[in-house]
Picture 1 (cartoon, rainbow, N blue to C red):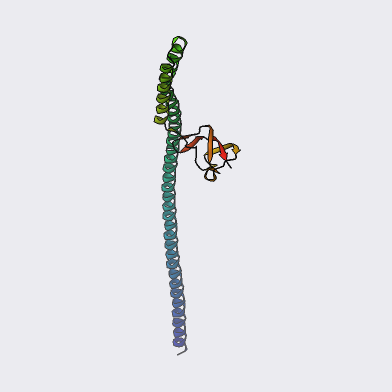
Picture 2 (picture 1 turned 180 degrees about the horizontal axis):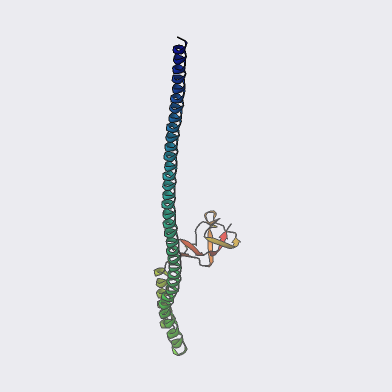
Length: 206
């Protein structure tokens, strides 16, 4: 009887040991599985970080390429504008030069007429012919001025205007309607197109 009880106790003890061993193995297996899963998650996170880094580098390269392209366009545009500015300035200088040349070329015939008139004055006895010749030259020169945009400022008997006239003297006048008006022109004034080229020097009545 005692032997049997002892045998049962030993069997129970062996069962407890086996359970303890099984529990230990189960715990170790769970820890190994958790470690493996953690390792996989870490590897996945590291791979994701590498992908994000590569994407950022690619975006930076694209931006750098666009910036370099814009800088190249800016440099080209700046050079083209500088060339355009220099060319325009040169053309303006040439236009001014040739405009003066054209003006002088047109005025030379008037000078020729004056020289011919001076030559005939020494030997001519007909004063009327000389006067007519001078009138022709004067009319020709007046027409030349008109063709080049120069015209006379009307002054005599006009109301005094400081924008057109320069008063050199004032004289008393008997007629009331002549007061404040130009009664004499000392030196004619002229327009160049719509701009006053020279003011008229006038005498004003008061």
